[in-house]
Image: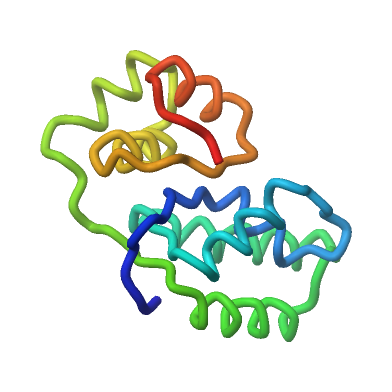
Length: 138
């Protein structure tokens, strides 16, 4: 991924994966795509793996082809999405415990909290946790 985040947001894999599937038409996902193109987005490193996991699951369910997955990954490379490896030490488990999240989902919450950015997610549980933590949603 290239670019920097200026006035961006934290991008959850659930939103980005919407862009890959023709049968998904979420208004918020489309708004996030536009916002990512304009101001950039940031995601924890787990996002990279979650995107690929979601694409493989979609292929196995017949929702997209391997060629469409490759095309989608090429498209993602063109967006200014910056992957972050730097979760604050000791922060993920307390957040996960407090809000009943997986460590993966807590990584999105931690990043949004630390960078004081909005969070774009279609995951209802993560969205509820963000709201409870005072993190604005896209």
